[in-house]
Image (cartoon, rainbow, N blue to C red; front, side, top):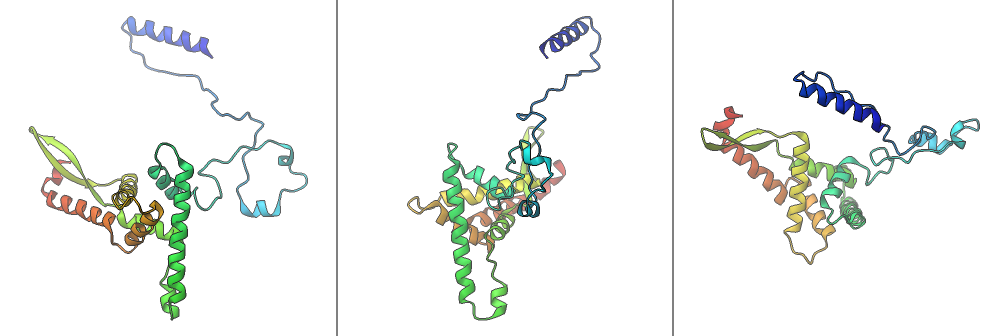
Length: 231
């Protein structure tokens, strides 16, 4: 693979030195997979895994690739939002510790909601109580997402804070960052999973420090709306 690359580079360099424009740049394709072609894709369908493969299926005797994190059927850590939140909360690469905190966080939320559900006296009250911690977590993050953000624009030597619409990826990043920072600002003696539980439940009810940060960003954007034409 090295010889074609060297010859192509020398040819391109000679073309540039002669003053001729280099119109096309083609590099050979390189196979970067860690698996050879004999490996087959993993089976992720739950019905197929429950029934099992047929007797004549060739996959009984063929090597299978390991499933990636975004293709796994695990319901907890391989959710896209939970995985992003776990990575943002991690420090010094200690993912096992962060996963344990996340697991306890969802356990605390589940226990709190089930206790409320058992104390409810009517079916109407019970129908309004959400007991799925993943749904509560996603709703809390959604309530903290800012619709607008500020960018710095320089015009005539003067810097302006111009409000613009936030991208979906930026909205999720800011919401999770505010939740984590709000927990780290609290008393250090309290376990992190307890602080996260309180903050996420507050955000689920449109309360708490993370939601106030979102509202503050919206107020700043509202005060700078006169500069919206500069974006």
